Image (cartoon, rainbow, N blue to C red; front, side):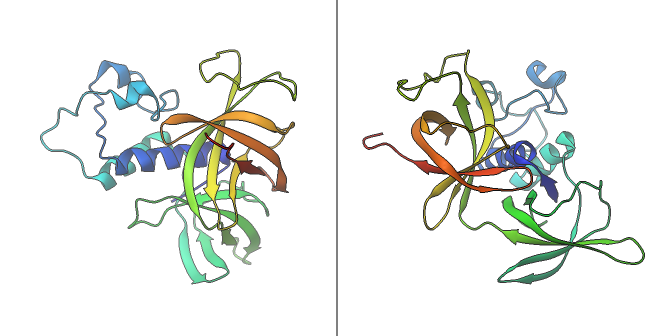
Length: 230
């Protein structure tokens, strides 16, 4: 299973976290009746966490919950792994929407695993018959779904309140590398270094977003620091 872009990849991470936490979706619940495609339903919200248990003849397995969510969100493609090495993965896109570009952020999950991983497209090759093959470089480290709050502010501003509805909230991916934590954001979202509110592990955290470390095709990698005492 493959998807691309910070927003869609984050949604797959949330679906994985939701399933691994043992949650069950009840599509007979009126809260979800008109939201079955989950495009407008936030799985990481208080509303989702308080859903009643599914009224089914049996509880779904974690894999079944994850596959159900993935199918309903309709954000993925199925690719085949051709080769795995220390440098990355070589995949074949049997059905592809034509979006792949070098430097693009890609999320992927192996069929037997509940975990979504993140990678960057490093190479594209098309055969004489038109079949697309891609080299993708995995980004190693613990990966978490996240959200960050931005708004009009000055460098001397104090903490951004997490319940301030006037602030812009953006999808993000938190990657804990061996060197430091970094935040992956869509391009042109981050501009001013400072203290911001970052949501992960189901609560808001005060963090320091320092500088852009890398610019990809459809994402930016930001250095993250945790203020002392937070």
